[in-house]
Image (cartoon, rainbow, N blue to C red; front, side, top):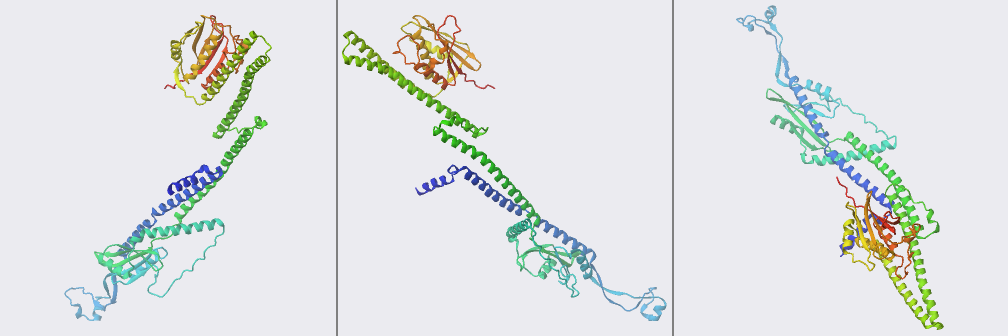
Length: 579
């Protein structure tokens, strides 16, 4: 139960419709910013994760180390002079024993030679130092060369191992940021590089080994005779990568070259790509906020106008006819048009209701006045018995008329309300009239119904019961004015995308100048007793046909044999789009 209540509360909180449009748009923009920042974080994470800088540096360092060892193998493994020997005779004739000659004798005969004693092949220090000094003194790598006796003979960080000369670099003074943009850029670089170093340290932490002395690496490399790599953390917390390679000639190891470097360094190029993406995102957010502001103004202002107009319309102010509804071509414009149409329809309905109330009061007042006059005459008791009977008959007729009038008014109100909720279905007009004539029971005047139906198929979307009621109203009106044994003609024909239904009779007809008045409530020009008709039938028929998006009107008859009244109904055809 508690969870259900919390769920309902959370739904109410997170339902945007509970907030004003400005708050809704603000929340949407905030969500865009939040999701954009999350995307940037994810993007930067994968940018760092997939960075190939370290792999490229390792590959480059291996190639450099191979280049160093290749050079040393070809140029630094030589015989080193040990000491100078005494003069020895160079024997020209192999049969002469040079040792028998004295030094003067050898000199006279030019048989002596000055020679040096050379060592076995070994890694020479001077050549290695010069090569490292000339090529790697200012690079990010630290190069150290060891001979096969584990003695360091060259070091790029200390190129002059044979003397005590030391070099010290003058630290550069940090440049002060000159403006906000430089400060922003430098701050972002610092943050990005911190995250960069943290992620890469986590990535390479599984490859870390315990720090060991360089001599151990040298001895291991001499023993294994192959390139090896080790990663460890130094005292400053930096991850150092050491690559060692043996210096080999004729399958013999004469020394080892060590290359070490800081494995993880800041990557300003990657940080620049990241900050460019962030700047683009910031500019995009600013543009979205500006456009949202103008969009919100364009959305809220017309809605506020519609709200004010609705309040004025509801207040029934006299000047509501001069209200300016927003004219737009979007959904707000459509809403404005629909509100305006709804307001006009509501006003029309109110006016019709007021007029209907007035008409009902007028129609009821007439019989009530007649009843009151008759009752007053009866109360005076001054009239003859024969006149009393006439008054009583008139009294009863007026009561019957009131009863019929009240019933018709009730039916009218019910039908008008049902029109709003009626259900439609497709019917075929010609088939409808054929069934109607087949089921027609006739009338006391012997009036027959004649059909002239077009051969086309006319499908319309209507409420069949209400449509039947309209046809019956027209036919009953024709019965009331037609002579005995006459005919009523129902004709159908096509007009554009509509079907025209004409109902003719052979009565005296209706004055064409009254073609609109006949559809007014309680109107009748019949010579027959008003007790039989309330004058609501045609008014009801017009309302029903309007609900079918059609029209009904009184027209002049175009049939010589039916010169009475002619009512024409126009209904839109239900046309299917055929490919």
